[in-house]
Length: 359
Ligand code: UD1
Ligand code: UDP
Image 1 (cartoon, rainbow, N blue to C red):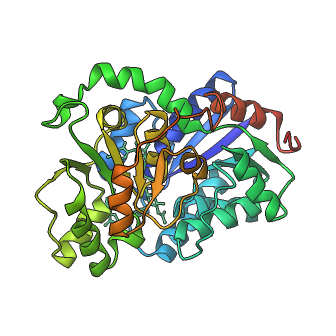
Image 2 (cartoon, protein in one colour):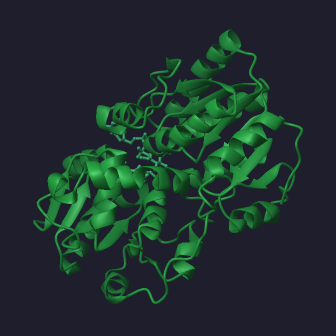
């Protein structure tokens, strides 16, 4: 069984860390392709080193650009790589980035059977580039690996029922594996000048929040209502936009460089609250029993909202004020599987593309 895995962005390295390990245990041969979409050491190399991810067979060196530039360059270079190094039994992709979309289109046309980890998520907002990427990927995938029953329902609504599997969320596997290590290796006050419970953790990088000067200014102004220090590991996209638009960050915000996954888990563990527009961080907050406020108009992770641990406020200051006062009433419930998603995925891949749904 030869699997070509394509990753390119930060959250995909974290997901691939646990799946790659499971593939090795299952005796599958994996060829890892890094598209080069993320390239700063703190956005890429740090994850490979810290999580012992095997070095990629190739880095396609695609880098930053418009959606078409990124997607097109990845397609051209990936197709040539697969022509040279193939045949593969599977192309394996994660999530909803431009790297995911490009690999999907290459796989569909070569063709190579395509397996999609984190399938079936929907924001129902097609203005979001990631939503377009997910819809296309799920439509063309041979296997869709869903992290939640809601994701399976979303696919069924679109008529996608063949090759759909509930696997649970590989990010839960990663958190279970690495949180104890994180706590030991990176006490919070070694990373920031605050102790546990003394700060809010923020991530903000989504195009809708940072790509327009007025919106970015508004998001920064809204932070005035947060009564605690805010720790912000700043994504390079946000940094670039703040600089370009000359928007200042409020004083209560403690900006740091992007952190490693273990540092991030430790920061999550010690935060009294999370403010985020990231997908992954909403669930990590939930699993860490840290209330979350989502700075987007909608979320794909609806279970965390229903459970009372995540409040979606977008850019609305009044909603943010109310959410800051909200206290979850019940403990987090087990959602997103049992922490064995990676092993389940490896077993499904091993069975081959003809295996049918188990839903
Ligand atoms: C991408 C994904 C997004 C995901 C995020 C994870 C798409 C459409 N978006 O967004 O879904 O949540 O990754 O972090 O694929 N930059 C650097 N150094 C880097 C990488 C990026 O400076 O190593 C800067 C560049 O200015 C670049 C900008 O960040 O133009 C945006 O990078 P890009 O990869 O296009 O999208 P992300 O915002 O990272
Ligand atoms: N993350 C990290 N360092 C940071 C910020 C985030 O390791 O400085 C981790 C975070 O814990 C989560 C993943 O990166 O596991 C989320 O990535 P991101 O927010 O970039 O993308 P999204 O989930 O929104 O696609």
